[in-house]
Image (cartoon, rainbow over all chains, first blue to last red; front, side, top):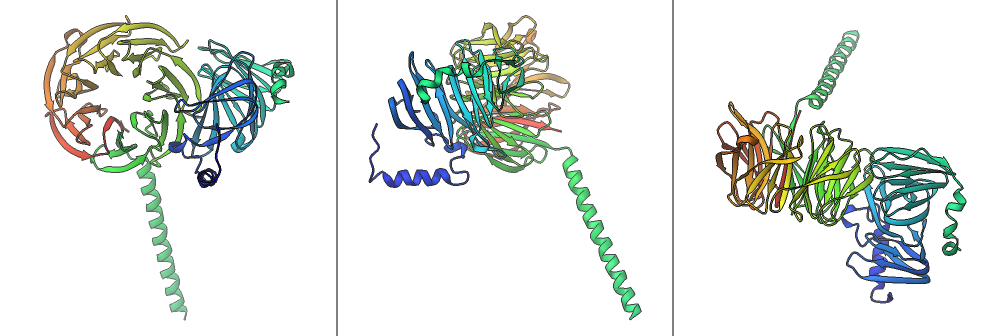
Length: 212
Length: 336
């Protein structure tokens, strides 16, 4: 993919200005096509599928724009690092598929959401607009001022490990508060398990190659 | 001076008293307005991306709420009437509407072609059938988070729960079945063959599950005790949705919008003796239908004529015709 300057420059500036307007980027009806970040590194290949089916591939370092509704995919032996606005780093482990979404609500504004159907992600969320929710078929992890790792098995079972801060793991049957250094599991048809101490650093050792 | 002063004081006192009384009245009116029984009819306008709010007693339009999404299709209202949830087919999103403020306060990404929404019996979750990806999204109605998804059959278009909440029923138009989901485990227990292009599902007054085969001409009834289809009857081409009511002593009856006939077909709501009792002429392409709590009024929306008709079940006559938005699909009633 190449972005040409000149004729398209005005459009790029207009999009950037619009996305900074209060509520501009937050309008739920106008969610698709909203720039949400960039893919910055891939060990192996990161495949990005736009909402119209167009595919882009990132190999090695780069700056591939990401938009709401994009589906990101890594295969075996591939990992990727993306940066979501306004400053949420996210790493994708191998064999991961996720979709970039958002929720808007009047009280809280826009919350960035990653819907993971398989694989694993690491993310460092902040406060306010830097909060993040990671959904799986069986659970949702909500992170605010927290560093998390979520692994999603083929059957949807989801293991949340919290490295720093506190995050919530919710299933249709209950919500668990998971502190740093502990992990909880959410499976289909069950409440999340009571958080247990884990070696959190070991759980995210996989991301070293792509975040270096 | 003193007289004038006293007079001024008296006047000031009278004014203060009057102001106090006015303020008190205003307070009282506000409280009474908050506590007064209200009934509301909500209409989803697919081509206007909006919800029309109609007073359920005067049949006057109160407001039109922008869903802040595209192709507003189905509605579910909370038991207390404070929340309305609307699916939006084109956006794949669920709108959460505060019915007091009459505004959309949240937009939740559920899945491709978000088609129908139903609230769990405790109203803590909204289940949304996404026809484009064959899933049910489970939305926490307090946090608006998606708590999980359930994979179902092809083309989920109808969704309802059993009286005891133990089972969810999902009609899949691609599979021509209704799936039974155990709400304790979220596993699909069974797929019941029901007919051509099953669509709308609703819990009937007898605890049975009623559905329409919109691709065919019949409606059917499922008994949750046996998880079997226990009755069916032809009502005409493209039956759409079902409500329930009484005609004087007669009833409960099932009132079915039949788009191909431009009529509401009235069926005895006894699965062992399903029979057509009456047919009521309505507008062009009737789709959504809902009843008031007493079962004496029906609210029917028409996709082509873009209006809502209020029908008195006692006389089977139209009491009012209310213009709504473009292509109204679904109507729900809430009465306090």
